[in-house]
Length: 144
Image 1: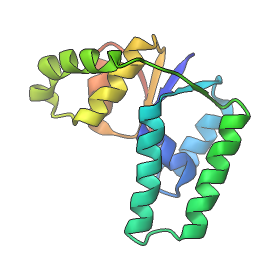
Image 2 (image 1 turned 180 degrees about the vertical axis):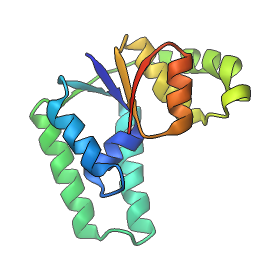
Image 3 (image 1 turned 120 degrees about the vertical axis):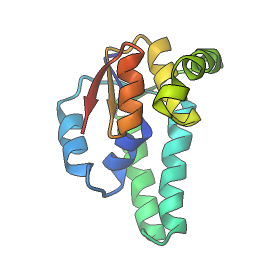
């Protein structure tokens, strides 16, 4: 698999934001499938529900997000991957090496750790600190 998408990209694909247009254009040209861990799906679903909680979207829009996500999953846009907890050991090493200088959050570190374990060629993000962490950890980054 060539790409790893963090939650900022996944959310931009299913929820309207300032990065949505570029994220959708990127996805149309991406080499598929994109790996999807349970962690990534959890964060995406949480982002959708947070928007509902903040009354930024309606329940109908939540159902639409779920529908299109499931449709993409069924069409092979994503491939479910299991990391068997190895991402935590990798993330711990990244935290020890980089968090004090970059200030990245734990969940962001887990995304970078997952990409490293999956031998991903390019990390896709809209997050500035995550971009810096991914680059520092040796990943090529696509950023919007």
